[in-house]
Amino acid sequence: MAIPFTPWPDEFARRYREKGYWLDRPLTDIIENQCENPSVALVDGARSFSYTQLDQLSSNLAASLLDRGVKPGDTALVHLGNNAEFFITFFALLKIGVVPVNALFSHQRNEVDAYAVQISPTLLIADQQHSLYQNAEAVDHFVTRHASIRTVLLLGTQGSQSLTAAIEQPAGGTELVPGPADQVAFFQLSGGSTGTPKLIPRTHNDYYYSIRRSNEVCGFSAQTRYLCALPAAHNYSMSSPGTLGVFLAGGCVVLASDPDATLCFPLIEQHQINVTALVPPAASLWLQAISEWGSNQQLASLRLLQVGGARLSPALAARIPAEMGCQLQQVFGMAEGLVNYTRLDDSPERIIHTQGKPMCPDDEVWVADENNNPLPTGQVGRLMTRGPYTFRGYFNSPEHNASAFDQNGFYCSGDLIAIDEAGYITVQGREKDQINRGGEKIAAEEIENLLQRHESVVHAGLVSIEDPLLGEKSCAYLVTSAPLRAVDIRRFLRSLGVADYKLPDRVVCVDALPLTAVGKVDKKALRRWMAERDAT
Ligand code: AMP
Ligand code: DBH
Image (cartoon, rainbow, N blue to C red; front, top):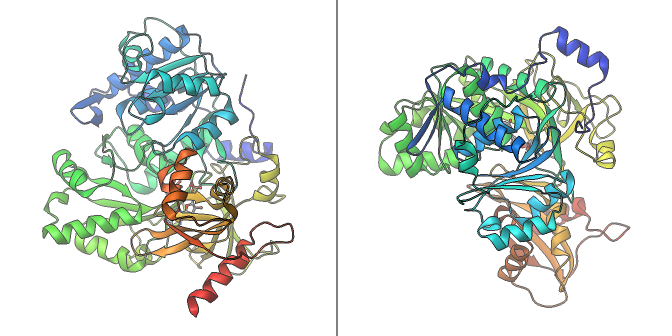
């Protein structure tokens, strides 16, 4: 059974094929076309994998999954960190048409449960280093909550549930057939702005194009040596051009567990990394490390630093080429599709001051006012977009889709932007109810709903506050019936299984919050109210 999703209208699909954006080839091509390439595709600590090995190991796992009764069209919940197994698993599932959600390693019970409830996975592949699966009891708990799960494979365990054993067992002659290229290959995660985390169906056709075109724009080739220090499952590090771009080009991916300079600088030197991708706070910490250590010598091989995921200030942008000795590329993308890049041959002025322009000539991007009318060049309004790799609907979310798209299928990302005469975009703000904590997105409503579950919380509103490093942090404004400290709130949310990055950085108790007519917290009024309070 194919996974349901909102398709592109026929006339668009025809055009995207005619123009060569959609090739009707599965994403498995990325490694299968290189199954005889002996060069190193992936380095994970002391382990390294050639293209031939990556292809073979993913076939082993694919065959083993079929043996275990996993079927094409099934869905899977994958919860792995930045390790080789993440990629082996990703390709294995693609090879047999099993559609995964790749949860971020920082996600906890609250997030993963929400994904599992939406996709009813038959397969769970997870890392025992994560507390959700740290022992048999924890895994039992998980499987009991999600009765659809029939097969479990774990990294770090032995016996019949060992992921490593399933990867190492030779495949034999099992025939492996990927899903159709015009169907859902996997789900991406949305940063979200609603109560439940939303899933983004990505087809082979659209994702493959996004990767291919990103490679052209960013100049990735067999010589590319890419450090993946952001979460491997994130759309940015996976496809802009990310690890999949590197594999497609025949280059080499080196994994890091996080973007910490003390970890990454030696890796860059050791593996002669020439490109990597960061979020702005990590770029800032790298600059700090260079100035503290008095040298950027370890970064000598680095040619290109991509920065995206959150607003990069021009001041920070200007320091990157000057102090790191490499080129900067700004990347403004979204897991929903549209990706904008500054071009490698753009002027320094453009690279420092804009978030780039859409990568595809058929990305349609315009700026809408509050009545959904187009605004003239240069004016600030809502970003509206559609194109060959921008989705047409969140998974199983008709109500939300009705407001997230206009009647012509344009997706409203919730970003406030301006587009200049040359088509370059600057991100000016946001209309969606989301906090961008240094690239990690927090849907305010999701946290507010959880805060309301505390017995002493009467009303809750989560808003962003400025932070010099992260850009934004979160602040919970609470009306309570009994005194509550920040630490109580954080402990409570942790007990509900909320990812750490979503815990409020600050908690402020107030007598009352502005409310809407139906008694919800009025976020627009709250922001105005805060601004007025801050001004006095
Ligand atoms: P997500 O929905 O989690 O994929 O996050 C995508 C959102 O991240 C965008 O809609 C923007 O709000 C934000 N974003 C990504 N890149 C940038 C950037 N370079 N500058 C400002 N905001 C960005
Ligand atoms: O923030 C993002 O989601 C993002 C940023 C840069 C993204 O999805 C991308 C590039 O593809």
